[in-house]
Length: 87
Image (tube, rainbow, N blue to C red; front, side, top):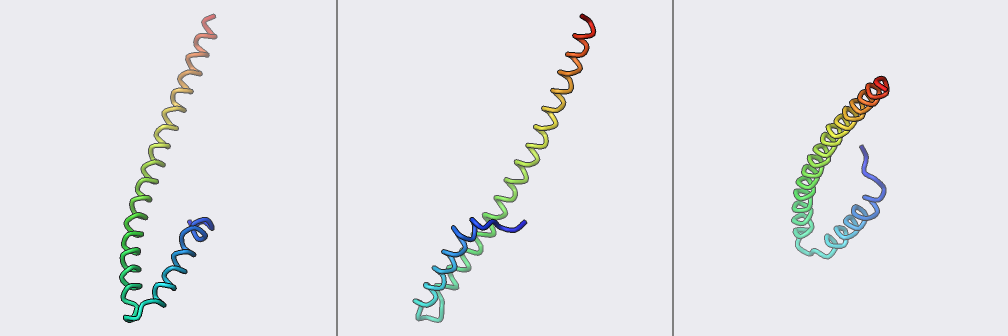
């Protein structure tokens, strides 16, 4: 799945512009730029893993809930047909 255009516009482009500016300001062989890129990369990996886990958990719970709703609807239809047949 590819990231959306909104992600690029809101996060990626400003980050790239900021990092370019920061690296150009750094007179000590880009030490600040490398440090920030490293920290941000580690943070991004952590957040991505957390978000993926939450998304998968939500998806699995949605599947369970959907099956439960379908089961209840099926039972209700069966009960309605039994009640209708008895009348």
